[in-house]
Image (cartoon, rainbow, N blue to C red; front, side, top):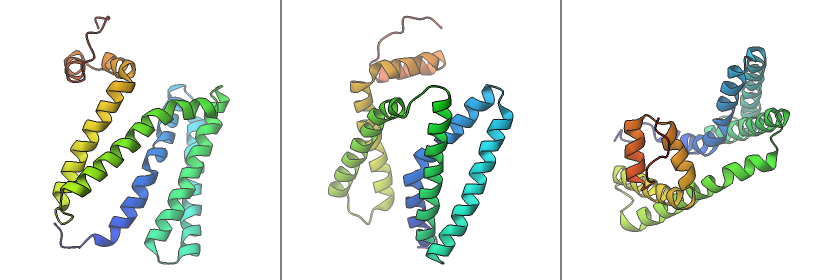
Length: 187
């Protein structure tokens, strides 16, 4: 589409996209801390996160020189490690163990890994590699269908809870699409 103008950033985005799910966790933690009125603590964690980012960028340049993909790996691992440590620290302070965190995340993560594998396998066997935009659209549709199917089979009650907090018009569409049935609550 852009005649390889941005080709050099593709590996960077691939690396950063691997770390993105874990990097989103501290945002939820900051929101939870802020909602409890612990603004100073949230600011302290944000400051620590910024300092770790600057240190990891410096360390990445020292270790990798001008290799942008190498820098992305070092920064990604460093920030992910900090995010995980911060998550465990904060949740332990509130009586939530690492085991319960993993137990809560692992099943849906496994569904996404399976859906990714299925989308990649079907996409790579059905479409020629030259059709990049078709791959993106096709893989997205296949991933979404497989992921929603797995979530519907294994986590229907969780999807029902999600539909319960959505506006009624959207909740109805979600319930009908995923065959979740009618909610017992009238909200």
